[in-house]
Length: 453
Image 1 (cartoon, rainbow, N blue to C red):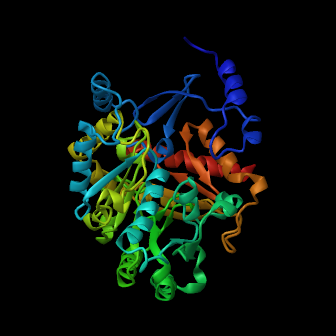
Image 2: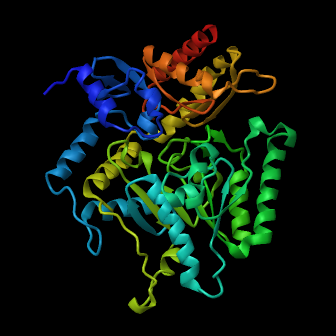
């Protein structure tokens, strides 16, 4: 059955509550209603085509409607759609776990969930219970977590507790457990601390001060490797992540790396930690794991973490956590095919090549006076918009400069999203060179147009 746009718009505004969306504003605008996808393009119900410049919230790898991913999903659904992983196994979840561990030397076990936030929530609970399982008396105080300023790890209560985004998280403060915040190397806004190397040194020293004083009460540190995505694509200078790992090891604090946004080729390597040869105790995966097809996430741990949960049934060392769709066959099957295609198509190497070429094209945006900073790691790009380059003052929220810019880009055939004063460009990994250049041209024209308004 085909529905008219006007009818869908009415029902959308009447019945749907959209995430991270101020609905008062939303209902005053014409909504974008997507009907289908073709490669790097999304098509709305009116037939308009848009380059998917946010990879459908950073998840799409090979493009929409990929024939081989479609086939994998169809083949699995004709076998079985779902059976529980609680106390029983299934074939796709076994094969995928094996593959993930092979991709992550040093990791040993895979715990499935369905969202990145859940993967982080699981990691936090694992880290806390790990210490309690080892020695609940000796490690009774190890209950706190350390995370970076402007950290974002998801929207469950535990994930919000280790988050540091005031705008998103302050309203929930009474519900949250205690975390310890340390500075993040946000180079563009840390001039007073010197150059990149000096900023990294300062941030690591602040972390060491915290760990030296409080390590006996800290269970783990949580970090987004190389790039803090939701904070506005804050790219960390070389050496920061390795420094964090070194300090965690020195003070006996577990390291949790949240690779949900940066994993599966997004930063130019299969996983971001590979770029600094970092091996976390626990790693969280999600988003691109299924190529943008199905909800799936995974929390990987070392053998040492896993073994702390083994014991006689009366010892209560079991990890009492799970989800109804844990290890769902449809999700695991398409994830396996996604990884197979990434390897067959040599996609990660291609991302690295495209990222270098794109970096040159992005420099043209500096011709626009409101572009203050361009941050890039692989195919994660953040363009920070400022009212005044000298003072780095941003536009007032009420002006909605960034929001109006993305609406203008949409008119020109590109879908992107802002994060505060930052326009994010997170394209589909398989987007062609020509499509990437077109997207940057649309960004340029859209920002230039808004300057004249």
